[in-house]
Image (cartoon, rainbow, N blue to C red; front, side, top):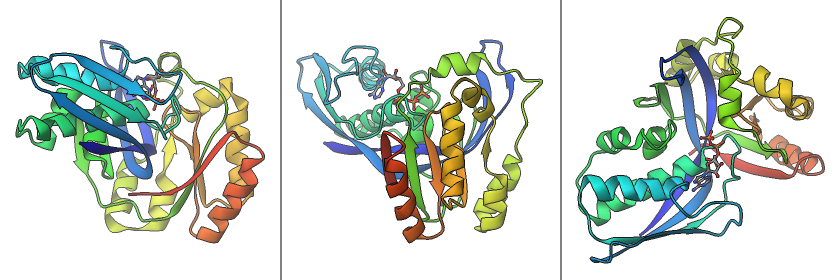
Length: 281
Ligand code: ATP
């Protein structure tokens, strides 16, 4: 079975407190875009062997791969003795703030749910998937949604309009745990996520654009000023909104006009390692 695993961007990302286990209590709005990995899943009756392979030289193929963890969760929970072979064609940049690993894990869960006729609803799959990573429950759905708690509460919203979106990933690696440890809750400049949700549900562009934001942006850009420079460049080149996704380093620009997005993409190519022109799903 071949399953598409789309990247996500954070239209809004906020956190109000840290849980006793140290993880942030999230309040996020996410949407998925048409930049995707392709995950092929094959089952081998009664072989019990699990293997994961990617076409990326940088990614682990063992239990550190989120797709591998996804297989094990379903195998152990449902006492499946089939072997599973997963091959991932990576298109989503790795460790970019675009949720690539989570998307792959969610794709494996959706595929095995069907191949093994487990009959789990998306809600049940999302619940099971939370132990893999906080973004996996969202990636089970891949629809515009408000995501809260540890990442397990998913409230589906009206789709984000089909604006052209330019995503640029600077050539640097940001460690998500390192950024999350640096959050100083007394200093966060919180967002109006309710306004963003209203804007989406009313398809009110002004409201949507005005209430987007990412409270982690000042933290990551303090360490990597080049991300701030990239965002400014996007705005100077005519982006209607420019914002960091997740913990970075990717920055996305929303343009009302395709011609402007194309111009932006071309101009950024000389400045940035990887640039993609996509649309919200
Ligand atoms: P996060 O915010 O959860 O750290 P991200 O969106 O910034 O994720 P990912 O591409 O998911 O970035 O990679 C994060 C880490 O997950 C990397 O260190 C990578 O080695 C690991 N990883 C495990 N499995 C995968 C996978 N299938 N694809 C990409 N990365 C994976």
